[in-house]
Length: 445
Image (cartoon, rainbow, N blue to C red; front, side, top):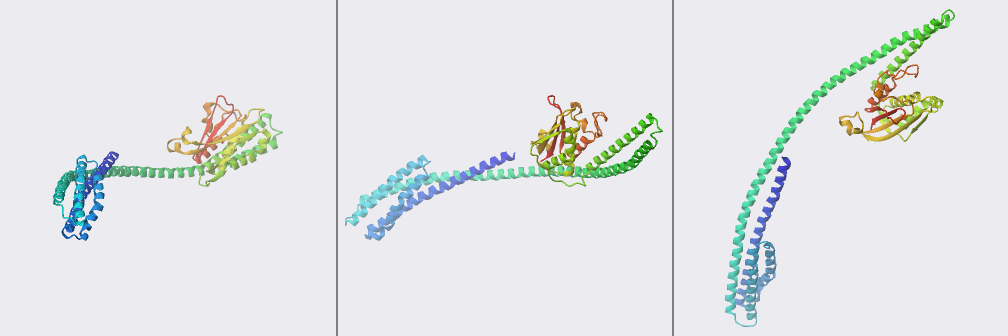
């Protein structure tokens, strides 16, 4: 509606401008027409004074008129070139003007040569002038009628544009009122949602603090009994091993192994709980090439032992928590080395490219419009089946027996937690034609 009214208003403004130009044009035609008669009258006045006195000073008006009459006729001809009737009248006026000026010049020349005035020329001059006046009167009458018509059109155009401008203003105000009303309701809803969200966040922070405190206290309280169990178990085994049966020795070793595994689980749980708390960390620019070098340094002995090869192109700089990003690389690369195929040297390749959020399967809403760094970790290890591609990120979830591979199954859960802390995504992919594990990490650009 606004566009339509704006277009109509613009069209009417153009039309109003044309009407104004037409009215101005008509005024100019009438003015030049009257100017022509005035010039001819001046010419006659100059002739009359000279004929009566013989004094050439009286010819000055005639001389000036001769110089300006052609210019006036040309201007008038240009103004009425689109009106055939007026153009024909002007052609007649031009012819009669030439005849009138010729008659004036002949009588002036006769006086200058000492002859008497040619009375016939005087009468002819008057006849020509009367015809010029009649034609000029007809021109002016038609232009006056045209002026009245154009004035009416201009008045109607002025009224129309007033109504259209008023309508445009009213519609614009109505839309603005609707818009601000909707904006007001939207803001109220958002404020209410924000207030609710703040309460939920406050509750969540309180719950997280309690959980963190609970995890710390629980792990601390659990570790002390575990240390005693291991200490007494080892003391019992070392002091009385000669007196114990093989079955008793085996049971004591199982107790110590279970206690060690319990302690490892508690330590991993503490690590996971610390990662969820972002208050202790600061985001900064982190060079992922440096992070990769740190990981290679941390696992240098294991890499040398397994004869592992790690390939990567130039990696980007990202906004993140350096400690957590190092831990992310550590977990992914250590997993690739740990779950390598028997008698096969691990090969790990890290690829990088920039992508848009709509290329990420899990991205929704505004996240689809953002740009992300995509890091792909590929290895030639044992891999996993597609049905476990999401399950492997669950805390303490293992796909293999604990006797086959070391660990508690928390590494990939920590990876997902770290990536989530950085507002990113981590996905596992299985390709039928590819043997090994593939992990895609998306970090905001």
